[in-house]
Amino acid sequence: MEAVPARARAYIACVVTAALLCLLPQPGTHTTWWAVVLLAGLYAGCERVARSRFVGISHPAGTFYPVLLAGAFLLPAPAAALVAVPGALLSQVGQRPVALRRVWRAAQLVLGVWAAARTHRLLGGPEAVAAGDVPYALGPAGAAVLAFCLVLALLDGGILAVAERVPVRRAWRGLVARSLAPIAVHGLAGLMMAVLWRSPYGPVAALLVLLPMCVSWWAFAQYHREHAAHQATIRALVQAVDIKDGYTRGHSERVGQASMMIARELGMADERVEVLRFAGILHDVGKLGVPTRLLRKDGPLTPEERRVIELHPEYGHEMVRGIGFLGEARAAVLHHHERLDGSGYPYGLVGRQIPESARVVAVADAFDAMTSTRSYSRARPVAVALAELERCAGSQFDPVMVAALVDAVGRTGWHPTVTADDDETRPPRVPPPGAHLSGRPGAHR
Image 1: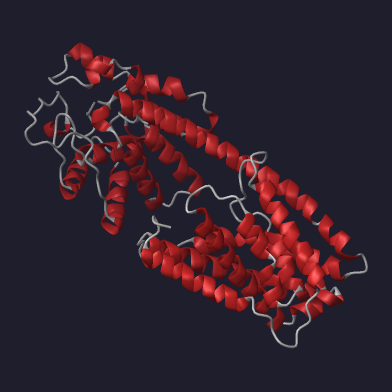
Image 2: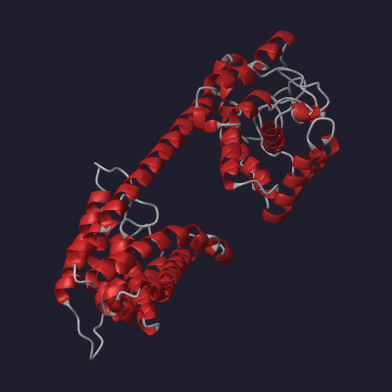
């Protein structure tokens, strides 16, 4: 609790109070309590299994929303909301404060399910479910799913804005769009459960709907487990580079961020944006094959030493070429020091011969290098760095990539991190030949 800001605790208290009010029984409504107990126990069991070590990962869109939404289609709003409480309060939580996170999750789900059940009832959904009129039932069920999704997104965005001071527009941006599709699938399964529950076959038939959902959920969980393993592999490689070349610590992550900004500005698909982020993060992994004494050398490099350092793109490509999920990121690792005029390395490619991913990373790499303090140069202001990129566009950099970065930085800003010792009493180091102070922003170590 001590780590949670007071404003966040107040926000959570308001949400919990609203959730408790939603649990108050409505006069004149009949509640089938055995159904509440059955659904609540089923949801709690699914939560425990999904978050257990055996499974290893929780579904990103909610473990078993079909059970919660089936309750919203079958029960009065307070009873339906009560279904979520045991599972949320007993679920495993990986971060502290555990109790507060459980209460927050329970309050979220109570409000979401309550809103879904009320919406469904107002549109005549229970009558359609009881009659087995599936085509007509789709309308109220769809509206209920949308209400459920909107409430969860509203509360998630609110806690981001309050607890982490994320700007309001950014806190809610994309929350509904990302969650609506998977929750809609869960809603359809919940509707099937509800229709079968009200049919002559009863609750046992309704529970059979969960079998294919379990299989699809498990497959999706394995995909996310594999994705997590990919991320861990990349983090390990980047940490190894940071340890070896301490003066550029954090550079890889920032190049990945800048590459992602360029890709988004160019309108690339989300999958390519992610691949280019990987490309930016891993572009210098070949430095693991370069002697540390050269990376940390105080004075200028000899021609022979520079030739050794210029082998790092090839070293990097050899290291990552067997990692299939990187895709075109591997070409960026190999070619990010090529220049449009053909004077780059390792192969002296010209213009469009250079892969697009490498042209993106080249701009991102040079931009971060110029705006970060290095062993041989102080950080330049962002505006100066962008002007230098524009000056070199067409000869060294792809003008399209430069323009995309300029537009992206102009809209969202850029906050470079100093990666070297900023102690003014430290004697300045001699910049190596071709460093950024020489006017060749892409020719850094």
